Image (cartoon, rainbow, N blue to C red; front, side):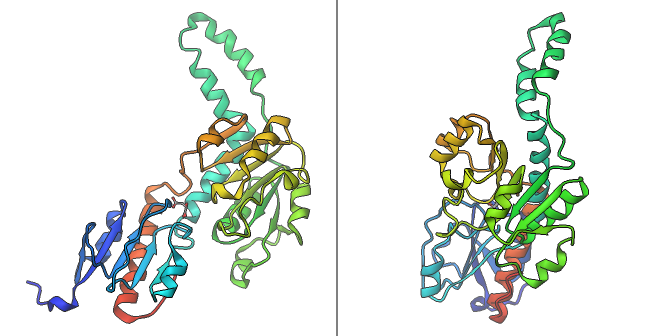
Length: 311
Ligand code: MLT
């Protein structure tokens, strides 16, 4: 039987479904209560905005994910509330989907599969039609093509190293790269000194930077115009990095060949040559568990020791 004094028991409020393995971190000395009005800490899963209710008891908010743009970080700082995220916990999941979609978009796989499904009622004509589809959806190999990676943090570094193994040339740009991350990067990754140098030389560009006032709208008419015509752009960071009106026009003109985005919305879904993905970048069982466990441990460690460890 538990002999914990009641004032040692802390309350954790979770917003959205946090993986069970994360909740297990709070097995002893904690109450996990989704409705609590006075939690000691909040763990958030979703990347959407939440109305966070502040109270005198609240000491920490953890986002089980990379981006914290849905948390009022400034207000938290003013009130002495620590904000955690889980850098790297979902990096492998995102990397796998980035490379999957680089390959799939080059082979026109998404459009080809959709088209093949329309042949359902064609009976013995299907064979002939498939021959036509084979020509219509002829693709490109990624081997020997150049992938540009903006942001060489946990995700960008994994993408870079694996893309090299697939035979791609890789150019990376990151003005803030840390020495630790640099060690994780293959020497074969060429480092662009400016983002313009990367834009000018890549067949595919993938972006892995947070959404801030400096990165908002970084993909726009003037940057598209400095890229190789027909470039494929992959956005697994945040929709706000792209000026959607300019992207629509660039897809129309062919300046951008494809826009692969993990952030579909009304505007995006109307675009030509868009590949809308329902925010699946980090959506694997493994990643859900990694993020939940890391977030829960950070909170537990902080509430018990006062130490802030964002890893
Ligand atoms: C993140 O912030 O980590 C990404 O948006 C992925 C996610 O949370 O699903």
